[in-house]
Amino acid sequence: MPRFVGEFFGSTRHSSRLLLECLLKMPKNEPVELLQGTLDMLILRTLQWGPQHGHGVGQAIRHSSDDLLKIERGSLYPALHRLEEQGLIASEWKASELNRRAKYYRLTRAGRKQLTAEQSKWNLLVKTIARVMKPA
Image 1 (cartoon, rainbow, N blue to C red):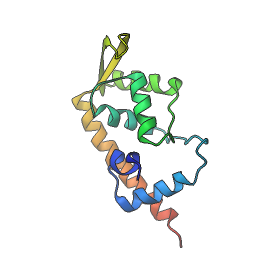
Image 2 (tube, rainbow, N blue to C red; image 1 turned 30 degrees about the vertical axis):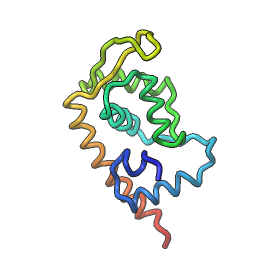
Image 3 (tube, one colour; image 1 turned 135 degrees about the vertical axis):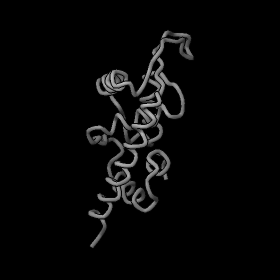
């Protein structure tokens, strides 16, 4: 099972498996549309592992989802700025691995609290959708 369903969101195995089955039936080249607010949760979850520059956040989400989720710059950077304005993440300029100047983001205490709340909502949503999608 790819990390992003079971490990990434921390949802139950049964509900995660049903959601994963739905996602895996989709063609690989067809992007998955995110529910409103989901991107923020994905960013917070990614930053839980440690500070990361914007491009790295997008790459981590893509990698964790087995390339099913491709976050466009036009969505990622406004979300990062919005989360920073809300005090859920903080940033600082540092040199990247390629010795280029990059803005690194990190999760704040408020961001950790928000992530916990969002994961609880997500788990409930996954369970509810799995119940509806369950074969009769």
